[in-house]
Length: 268
Image (cartoon, rainbow, N blue to C red; front, side):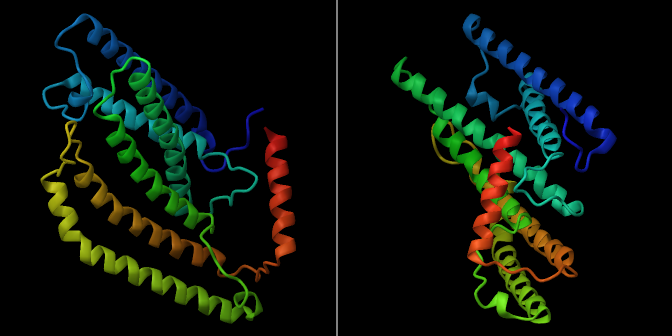
């Protein structure tokens, strides 16, 4: 039974179709590259995959991978789990899509490391790229997870004093927390912008045999995503402004969490 659409609405089926087509395209190109590597001495390997200049098939492969991940993430973000906070506005949807990208990337890390283990210990042919690729992907998983945690209000919070405050003081505390976060984000962007742009413009590499441009991509991504985290925090404040005060007694939290986990398992 198909679950109710959260935000795509009538676009749910077209997005699903595009995701399937792009995923199939990635699979076909991958099979062709594998077959070409077996029969040809001038095959495309992982070294060429991050250097697509003059290789249109590699460029198509990379764009197809990016598109497949994006559209699959959009489709998966159109449903919410029992323990997830439903999106309320554009920035919540952006964070939810990013969370699905992180989920897919986590699976990709598992696949990469599985390939490395089999290649190393079964065929005695370790790769030069598996470690760096897993680090590269994991960096974005970490960043997107932080954004998702902000949207879900899942960062560690201490409620002992907060719950005893009247609602207007709770709002004042929320504003103070947001201002401290914005100050941190401003300091990070102010202090890291020049270095991030310098690394990005020269596409600084990792300095290994495979030599991927991890610093040139991850450093700017850090600044971009912490800005998205700050915007999400502002969205959270606006969304929660007129809500009734919440109380977080330990017994209540345990009961709600257990019930939500039970419902999630039953749905599966």
